[in-house]
Image (cartoon, rainbow, N blue to C red; front, side, top):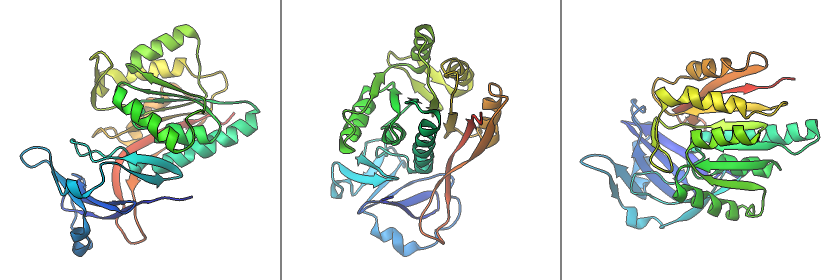
Length: 282
């Protein structure tokens, strides 16, 4: 499977990454060790830092937008004012797992599966699920990000795939889905530490996540496949995330771990968030 992402090095509170032919130097607080190869950092096309504000150096040298294939999904990237570029590559192994699991479960169950992606950002996981043949629902509170995800769908020839594109507050949407009786076989949620809904609704993970998970549990089908919970919030460790899921699913298999940015053998893995999942064994 083609993958044009690579972690080149990390250290001194930064990460050096290659996205296709473009090399970026950006902050990463957890990279507290010394870089392994200081000469590589000279190859950065652009650098971003937060010293005295949000600043790009060399941004003009980078294409306004460029496409990169990551874990079999083509993504449009762009150097935004906030330092994000439109993808979190630490989730790429989860995309592969979602794609493979949904394809296997579709064959096993003999029916089309429904996948729900909450806080879905630019759509990598949605498109990986769609590649498996699943019927998808992609939800984010930002219309700009949903539009970006739809562009990514077109890049992967999935513009006509069975994907619902929703701009809404997650909790309000889930409550409506419960009333409608809509259910899903696989659900991914990546709640922010702090966020705003479509109409300015406040989302704080410490206060809102349990409510969200209560509703997620109510929109699972009678024969579901999985629930996958990810987080970049400090303190929400793999065990914390796993314990949150165990409140609802007492049978089945639980797995958890760290999301990692990775490169060639010998390059230090860089933890960047955590995940936990419940898998239905029945």
